[in-house]
Amino acid sequence: MESTDDAFLSAYDAVLAARWPAATEQAEIHTPYGTTHVNSVGPADAPPVVLLHGGGTTSTVWFATATALGGGYRVHAVDTVGEAGRSVAGERAIRALDDMTAWLDAVLDGLGASSVSLCGHSYGAWSALHYAAHAPGRVRALVLADPTNCFTGFSRRYLLRALPMLLRPTVRRRRAFLDWETRGAPLDETWLRLYDRAADFPAARPLTGPRPGPETLRALRLPVLLLLAEHSRAHDIGRVAASAAALLPRVETAVLPGATHHTLPLAAPPEMDARIGEFLAAHGRDD
Image (cartoon, rainbow, N blue to C red; front, side, top):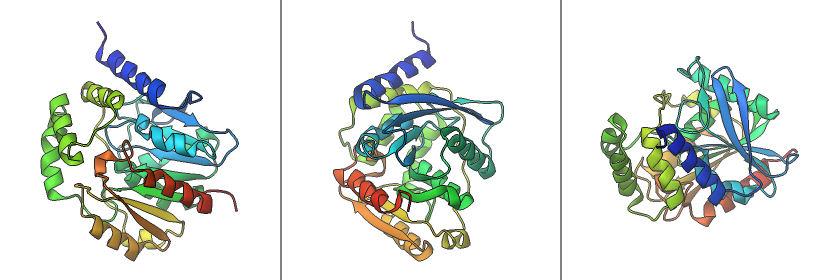
């Protein structure tokens, strides 16, 4: 009989085999916070793009974006240390923002990347924005896909719906929440099997913290692409867009039609990867 860990890892590998390009390379990067697993596609000498996933989803969720960008970029999708995935947490835990930014510093060092374009979804976008503020010289361009807790707080209704799943993340509770937020949108079945297995996979409580301060955001001079899900239930996208426009000096904003918070990036409309590609062509390469 398969153990919980073995069943999860088998489901993880099934997503890679079914949805990721055949040339996908896997690597382990040693950091002070444990071993970080990275799935990479694209030419080794192409400009690097690092993808950070949302909570509870693993790097495998980026298969469409990695495929779309992999022709012209070296795309690295990272499993966050401490969450369900192939990364293995070390004795030193990520407990504060300084830990998270130091972990990403070590990941970029391990990738041999002095600077990257950084793309995050949800919690991954929160991490990406804080990292860009920490090390603006290492981030050429920043893509934030329906970022949570970056410019406004969560919707109260979203948090109340999520609470049972957060307190005890069973398969049934995770699926019920996902169905509610996505309004029952059809999602990739191979990936959903992995999502179900993650309910029982050992994971640390994710780092949470404050939104970046207004002065921090006003000082961020790098180009930012803000992509908002039209039907996101995580927050009011109008308020997110207005706050970002008031605080970020170089932000472009687009609303992704028909998308919800949790259909990104798994079942994103074609506009998402097209907009990311256009944005990176303008800002994600050496001058």
